[in-house]
Image 1 (cartoon, rainbow, N blue to C red):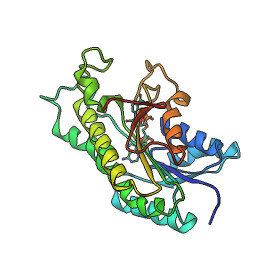
Image 2: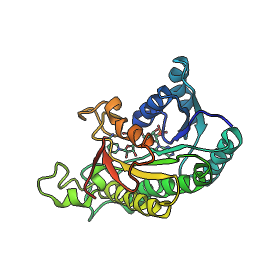
Image 3: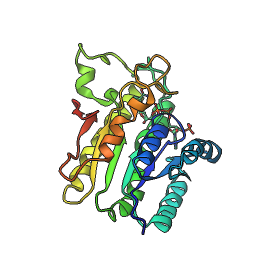
Length: 243
Ligand SMILES: NC(=O)c1ccc[n+]([C@@H]2O[C@H](COP(=O)([O-])OP(=O)(O)OC[C@H]3O[C@@H](n4cnc5c(N)ncnc54)[C@H](OP(=O)(O)O)[C@@H]3O)[C@@H](O)[C@H]2O)c1
């Protein structure tokens, strides 16, 4: 069995997931870069490999049970365990000004399929491998937009941002994080939610203040938590957010 730490990042072919993969690989991890599209995934891994980093494409469509099982089987066969799971893949499909009263049910379902159901399915499939790690870490990419306290606060920067399908999917991820952390509290596995900040990516758009290097900071920080570190938390950088 390899002595190198093994990390799986979902949605690693671009944006925050790609940068998280780069930073973890530079820190010495073997990084399995999940991508639903083989060509995009291999293309994304190439510059990291050219840098001499141990970054490998793995096919992973988070809404497809067969794809998830195949990825878990491959990781089990090749590495025997998993040390880090970054549930990064996510979508926002309803537009940032969608109204709860009119948002299409199709878009609500589509959003939950990836952001919530997909995240749970990947986590459940990888847990047997994470259990074999000496210090398993699960990081769930959520958002300040999943925070009920922020939405209710008229002084919050996100007050009135009614992209309800996305918001609700991330609030649901927060609940999964807290409940899973509780279930695993006597184990070596820590489970935390990460808000990356507003980041310049295809999702975040050009107007975002943070670049991907800054956007990957919270995910990377939470994968490196020591044994004494928190579990069941919701962080931006190393600061706990309001739920
Ligand atoms: N950017 C921000 O400001 C911001 C703020 C708060 C939270 N976040 C969260 O941070 C995470 C990363 O966001 P980002 O800004 O880097 O977004 P992004 O640039 O749009 O990248 C999203 C990634 O998720 C992948 N993905 C989407 N659906 C998938 C599926 N069904 N199966 C597997 N992979 C799938 C995409 O793959 P394809 O290329 O194949 O589509 C892509 O690799 C998301 O969870 C997002 O909600 C972002």
